Amino acid sequence: MHQDGYEDKIKFFGIGKTQHQSSLSNWTNGNNTSVCMDISPENLVWNDWNANQRDLFILDYQGNLISQQNISSGLPNNLQNTLLNLIEQIPNDQIQGDMNSDGGINVLDIVLISNLIFANEYSEIGDVNTDGILNILDIVILVNTIIGD
Image (cartoon, rainbow, N blue to C red; front, side, top):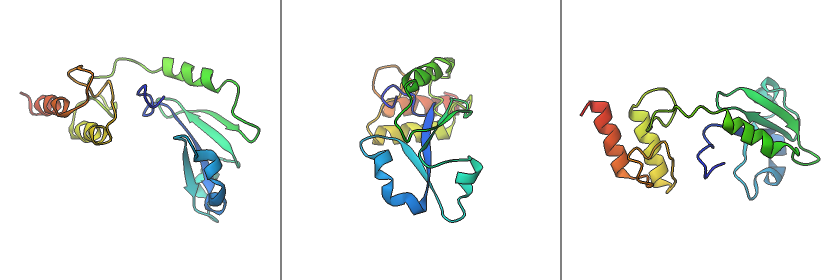
């Protein structure tokens, strides 16, 4: 998902407690899975999400909770299909350069593209001139769009 540009559209993550932080590596080693470490003993995030140990949460591109599933016995068999279905639901009418999908081009989009450039990452939406490279030329085009040139 990351290399295809969907990492900012579909989210999957776990919610852990700081008291279990020492066993977090079994979630995160060798992958990009996010885990929110909730501060024990309050566990406000844990409680708000009605989380259980080893629950996997999946959100769609609009931030709606699609799935909460315990993965103690392994990943769900339908995980790949679920993610592919969620990707198909993403509208492709996004404005070129609108990195945060807020419906307009602004300074935040420039900051987000700059971060991708510094991280040597690519985004088709950020590649405003569609040359297959995310670079300063894309930023210049966005600046000109913002100032009206």
